[in-house]
Amino acid sequence: MPSSPSSSAQEAREAVAARLRELLLDAGLTGRELAIRCGWHPSKSSRIMNGKTPPSDADIRSWCEACGAAGQADDIIAANRTADSMYVQWKKLQRHGMRRAQEEVVPLWERTRQFRVYASNVVPGMLQTPGYATALMASITEFQGTPDDVAEAVEARMARAHVIREGNHRFALLMEETVLRYRIGDSEAMAAQLGYLLAVMALPRVSLGIIPFTAPRRIWPLEAFYMFDDQHVAVELLTAGVNVKTPSEIAEYGRAFEGLAELAVHGSQARALITSAIESLG
Image 1: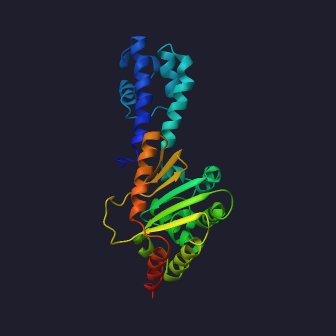
Image 2 (image 1 turned 90 degrees about the vertical axis):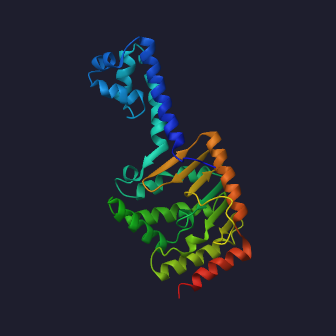
Image 3 (image 1 turned 60 degrees about the vertical axis):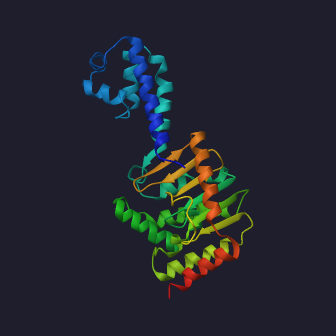
C-alpha cells in the first residue's frame, strides 16, 4: 500500500539536489567556494544540496554558471518545477480564492477516460450538490483564512462536473459509509446531497460503491485520492495536494483501489445504506 503520498515529490526534489551536487563535484568546488561565486551564505549551498531548501530558477542558473555548466540550467529548472508541482500547499494554490483551483483541473478532467476515486471524508467534488459544496468550501475558506469566493468556486465546481454526464468518461467511485453520515451543511443540504447520490447511481458510466462500517478491513481507511487513467493520482491532505506521477506509485494506488473495491457494496445494498443515512437526518 502507498506508504507516503508525498514520497514522489520528495524523491523528485532529491533528484534535483543530486544533480546540483554532481555539478559541484565535477567543478571541483566546495560549498563555500560556490557560495562566494553565487554571492550567498554558505549555509544556503548546504540546504540546497541536501534537498532542504528548494532552489529558485535564479538559484539554479547561478549554481550552474558557477560550476561552468550553464548549458544544463534549463533542464534542471524544468525538473525542479516538476518537483514543485507534485506537492502544492492549499494556501498557495488558493491564495486568490478557490475558484481558480476548480478551473485549473478542467483540462485534466476532460481528457481523462477512466476515473477511479476513493473518498474517506467528504463526497467527491464531481458528485457534490451546490448546497453541500457551499457548506464545505465555506468551512475550508474559514479554516485556511483564504479569500472568500465561495459562490464563484461552487459555480466552477458545478460546471466542471459536466464530465459525469457528457463525453466518453467512466467513473468507478468508492466512498466510506462515514461520508454518508458526516454532517456537511444542514439537514436539508445533506438530504439533497444523499438524494443526488441515488440519482447518479443510475447513470450508465458510473459505478458507485459504499464501504460499510461493518466491512472486515483488509485495507485500512486511506487519505482521499483521485486516479486519472493510469497517468496521475491526486491525493488530498489537510495542508496540501500531492500529485503522484511515478508509475510504480500509481500502480500501488491502483492496487489499493482494487482492494478497497472488494470491501464495497454496490447496487441495492449501496442504495440501502444511502437511504438509511437520509432517514437518520430526521
